Image (cartoon, rainbow, N blue to C red; front, top):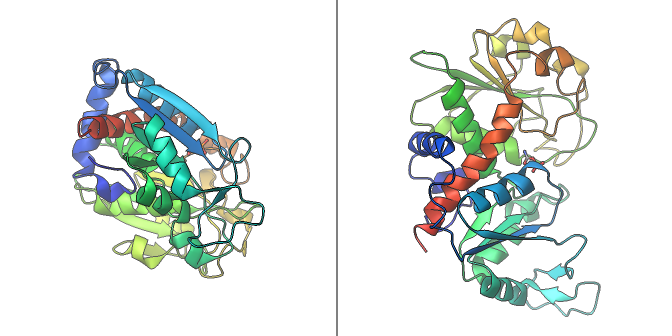
Length: 318
Ligand code: CP
């Protein structure tokens, strides 16, 4: 694999998830592959899981991780070409990406959407600039519009916890949140579920006005009645996102949408999933996240094996 910017960079989602499950049984078996190789993890935004699990994955493969928090530690980067750099930004990404490429064999980037300018966010300024100017493979650790490492961890988790059924019903449910959050996790989960080789029934439920980018949800059933959407579901994947249409706005905080036993009772004993971090009793009630059906901790554990299988595939191609 040359890069991992989107879930569609995987040749086969199910096969990759199965490979990751095999890798999980003996995570140190490919230590030689990453020997004397360095990965640079560049964070333009906060992280717990991505930061630690990607380092852990790299260490499992014998790699040396270097972490840099651009917000607090790096020079402020300019991304526009031809700019007169007489304001606050000290370094152009053109130099920065080439310089970092000399120190690292793989560059991983986290850069969230600003949620103010849809066109700018969808252009993926940071990720695309590194893709353009870096001379080594680039890995997406959550960009403006996608979180493919999370989506692969989700596919691994579904594979491990799925009931013996011909066709799984997977529901992506919006839930309230006081702050405006990006669409990346919802987008990538929808893309993964819709492209999965097992052919899931994919239902997305949210209040009217919270439709995700239709390019990401083509093929899913959109259901505005949350209780109806949950009927007979096998997996409930919950996430807040701000409005896509009224870009970045929080138009609804209706606590009826908070996931509780009321909606879960409609399901076929569904497992509860969330990428974390999660606001308890806002997004999901304690009674659900603390229940036996909650697999959020296992899901977070799979972030290591998602990153590890992707890094392995990139290392094999270096
Ligand atoms: N799920 C996830 O990406 O978590 P972090 O934001 O803590 O990395």
